[in-house]
Amino acid sequence: MSFFSNLFTKKNSAPVAKDRLQILLAHERSSRNSNSDLLQKLQKEIMEVIQKHISIDQEKIQIKVDRGNDFSTLEIDIEVPQQENIT
Amino acid sequence: MAKVIVVTSGKGGVGKTTSTAAIGAALAQTGQSVVVIDFDVGLRNLDLVMGAERRVVFDFVNVIQGEAALSQALIKDKRVENLYILAASQTRDKDALTEDGVEKVITELKEKFDWIICDSPAGIERGAKMAMHFADEAIIITNPEVSSVRDSDRIIGILDSTTDKAQKGEKIPKHLLITRYAASRASRGDMLNTDDILEILSIPLIGIIPESEDVLKASNLGSPITLSSPNSAAARAYTEAVKRLQGDKIEVTVPTDKKGFFNWLLGRNGS
Image 1 (cartoon, rainbow over the protein chains, first blue to last red):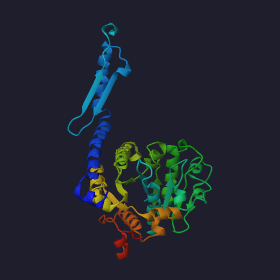
Image 2: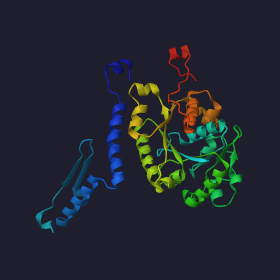
Image 3: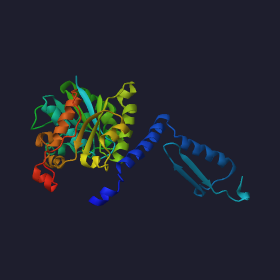
């Protein structure tokens, strides 16, 4: 980074590193202590409920997790097959 | 009363072996008797960093398996009195480190030495678990880098749950040693600074080793830095860390190399 760009842009990477670590480690520590991450538990149970009703093709499911400081999101996207495939 | 110290980090390449050599030598330089043990079975390097690579006849695994006596496997350092090395095996696999075997050797070493410094391999597998298992205290080596801080946090969790002390319900005292620290980059905000790391890991700081060419020079020479260039900033930082390990209350600072005016003008690092 040149002297001038250093002078005019105040984008430091260390605060970003610190924030990312604090969020990540908060989750890793809680899952270490309770031995199960809430999001993973939810994901597992939701899948079990769905499997009761639909035979699921694993490739038709998209699972996204975004862990944040204040809240996390769990997004499960399931492609529901045609009516005749429902058991 | 002998003290068993594990030098660990989780992540590789952060300076465990270099620090083990420097800390072991610095302790011996204060007149204490010290043995440094390499737990990295299969990938030994402490012997090389200590300059004893051509003198290894028997190793840690030979002793565990009863193929050699402990006194035969201990290599005496040629530079400092009361400093010994116990090398790791290069040919065996890590399963050779049995809990009973390690305990037997450490118990025997406790009768002969004031300090037993265990150099842990990277990772969280058997070698690393065995290195920390019988430790009284731990030194956690961390670089100011996200991956290293994360792995240190993981190691702290393992120290608090799987070690002999933890299983007996005791807390294992932990000390943070930050290595490869560049004060100028940290003050510019481009490197995690000491306060950031302390806030995240929340274990007491035992020292800050500045990023320095002298550290590589020392391992090139096969000499702990506290012996090869005792006046360098890095060596002074290790010497102070060792005083803190021995219970001295000294404020932690980042030692710096004195820069000559011309070097400063040219932006060179003094050495």
